[in-house]
Image (cartoon, rainbow, N blue to C red; front, side):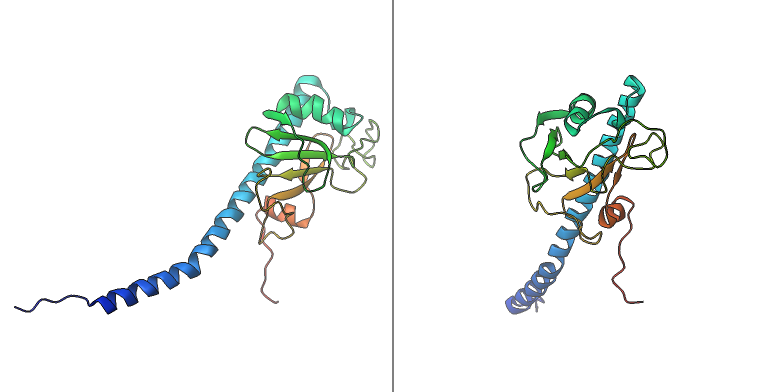
Length: 196
């Protein structure tokens, strides 16, 4: 009786083909996984700081416009309303300021760009109660590193390839992503690479 089976050469060729396919697809899958992790963490970070501002306003009646400096804002709002494990000695890639690290390892820095401009109800005033103007002179005043000191420690410049560092802007009672890439990541919009 004749037995049928695969030869050693056939098995090895099959394994080589599977290995080549895996080598081509695994890096793409890993990059997609990391990108999705960074996206989710950024959304969580924005949600966390927004909740802290909202809670502080509900309990204390104070918004970001009521704090004279970035240090006051961090000490009196974020450190009181978020799960802070330490005042961070880390900066977010050279963006120093009043920094803190949360229990989940995210690092936040409110930079010296934060200025409230005084309390005002004028819609055109900086840091107004209508949330139409940010508490800044036009630069991002909140930097977020969603995975702390772990790599890649690079700023997100494209929604197609998000990294772990993002910019945001503090308003009187809310925080919004700042810059086109951060906004696209937050709102799940990707830049089309096809030519029109």
